[in-house]
Image 1 (cartoon, rainbow, N blue to C red):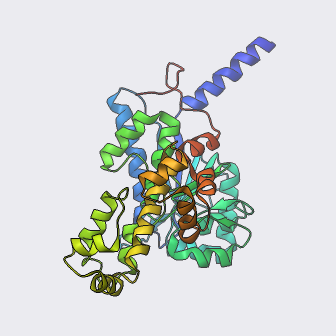
Image 2 (image 1 turned 30 degrees about the vertical axis):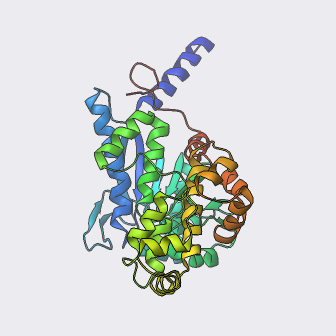
Image 3 (image 1 turned 90 degrees about the vertical axis):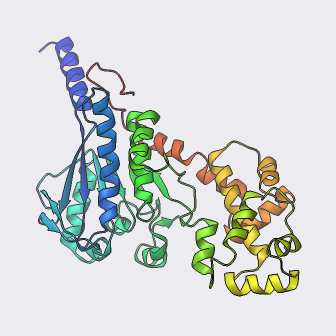
Length: 367
């Protein structure tokens, strides 16, 4: 075989490899979280449907794997059929996604499961965990001395089990080399849409998001808890001041005082402050701080606005005031937060480090 023939053969092989659908293996350990499985897979299916409407071949071929294969129990009480055995010799994939659930947290105590998972990770191109699927991924050792995230309810458990991993509490999803982790349940859809955007472009990802009736993607640096949701979890009576809280969020740039809040509620400032603290388990001023920090987080991760402009838009008296409130509520400065999470989607796309999808004409797939 001449050198020219060898070069042509290699090019043809590379083209054939890239023009095939990406093999996606979703791994579930029973009992698994149903939405961790169906959310990402439906997003990939939506991308395939969008491609079909354009007369293009599917980009993803999906399989469900589990120890032993067969019926996989889920936390919703419904079983899903796994057509692939996790212990299958030589099992590999272009993309591995590990679902969360009680089974994923328990599998770390089963050496055989851990070894099979480690082998699959080593033979596969990209590996991601959804929710507490991070426990299964972390058990293989591949995340040691790397950054990772998981569902907020299991932060302490995760840190205790895997002290060598740098747990990021303020992330919906993040990437460290070929390994990716995402937060609880619905964040798996955010992660998968970012994956689709990398592989097929923003318009295809947008089409998939429309089909699922969700936003294209929340930035990876967005908190797992919005200020509103955190307030509702913390509050004794979250509905009592819900309208006021929404008014505060819509007017963050204004100089909002406790007196103004009290006037909106037709109460005296003293009575209002007492009632608000009783209902929300936080003072009105602290709640306003948290709303402003939450808004600033979004702007820091999604925009290129200067810190001064963000501080003004969110109602902070100065950049120094914003810095102080960030240290109080987020435990990092705005600058540190931005360096970690600004354009998290773009950083995520850059870090995946795999070739884009190539269509039958040898060109990068586009809508």
